Amino acid sequence: MRIDKWLWFTRFYKTRGLAGSAVSGGHVRINDARAKAANRVSVGDRIRLVRDQLQFNLVVEAIPTRRGPAAEASRCYSEDEASVASRKKMLAEISADRRSMPRTPGRPDKHTQRKLRQRNREAE
Image (cartoon, rainbow, N blue to C red):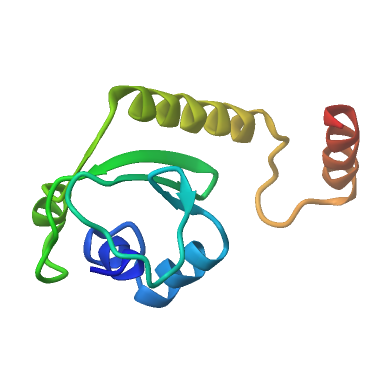
């Protein structure tokens, strides 16, 4: 099965077009080699995927026959614990960063925009 179709069947992407764009954009590696959309996936292949700044390290366990429910799709791959832990850590950091930003109800006013720009300059 093609890698873009496999990513769509296993519900990593909402559409096959998005999966193909991720593959052609270099966000997917099969067995540590950059993947092309037409690359074939077989049982035992290792897939490294970056989606929304989050990294997934997967091993192909099965080839799905259709794009079914999420429970069915999750049986087609396994993920190592280090990958899950690093992704949870990254999500926690992003969440903490979002909570530290100045907030206003609705659109930011002039003073809040100034604080945001100042904060971005300090981060650089």
